[in-house]
Length: 221
Image (cartoon, rainbow, N blue to C red):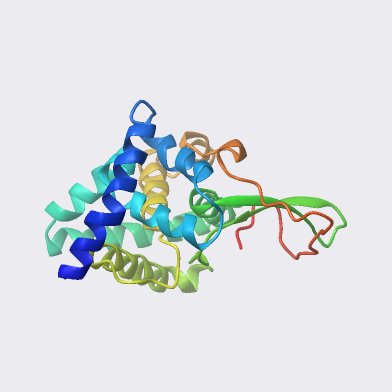
């Protein structure tokens, strides 16, 4: 612990102070995206972003609200929320395009860069990229397992343990809360959810190379 505290004081804190000062006049929802464009690509830049996402200054209003609510709620209320989320996911899966809309929002919310890649149809498609694979909703049979994985992501964030998947907890909860608030109206839900445009993400370019991919538009790899 002493080594961790010293490393944070000597290396992380100066970086956080610089990043906070650089984005202090920007809306919360744009701060991480703006810093993503200012950091180098690769492992160093991705690792720096993990420190930013743990800092209150770089959390969105939704993330802060969910963090505070998570700390305050009782085990009984957590069980009730899990039941409601399962009902919402099952209702969402019954709607045409519901699963695709939910997974697309997770991909777009967790994207760190994008590229144009050639698909099977011979056309170029926008492909979103992240530092870790995403845990997406696979269907009605996957609802409870998906919620289990969201809870494990929550535990990993609070204990700062590594997780093999990128955290989709906040965007998943935000989507389901909005879907619930709007009475299960999928069109209104998609319209109400804010999304970062491609201009806020760096573009991956490989001169002289076009990668053939099975990806569909908006897919995150």
